[in-house]
Length: 241
Image 1 (cartoon, rainbow, N blue to C red):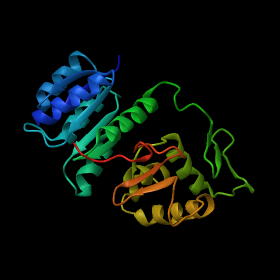
Image 2: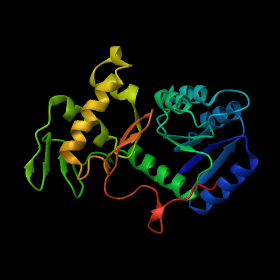
Image 3: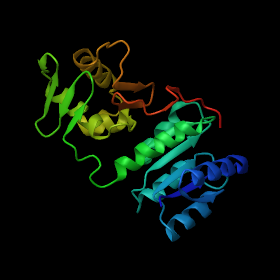
Image 4: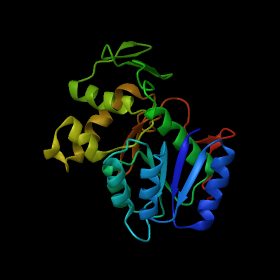
């Protein structure tokens, strides 16, 4: 059974999460502060952590950094903070994704499933990723559409490869800049805008309304396939927790 550690100082939210996650087949442990959370995590390492950034004794980013010192378990951040810097800091510290309060359980559960799939050994080993618009062959470094091969520059391929290998995960601007151009390019976000625009022009059916190469404004980018990651009865999940 998948072990989930929920860290939040809102008792009503923790109770709702415990009930919903237990009903979903997860084994749930809870903590209302960072100290207890780190103690529980050290005693019984979780498979996934759901973490509020606004804890009473320690900032959530510090908790992420402490966990990342020894654990690779996926971390999904819960935050009521609507400004981007807090989310970016959490992602750069090692969080895998975030959900902004209030949120719906279908959304959180979808984020959890995606994070756990990525964390499963061999889960991302498939060298070919297909969408209805194009196919990416990671081992052959080849992208094709119904019209044939798509010519990508080395930089475009590098960006696409990173996003496809981390399918569904939000990659921050800083992380992409570091991996593609190096640590001296932290502020060169215009590089990303230009190259992502070129990738969309070459791959997206409608570059103005991308389906696969998604921008999270001010934060980063994620690659999605044709299957929506957050749906309920065919529609976008309602944020209601």
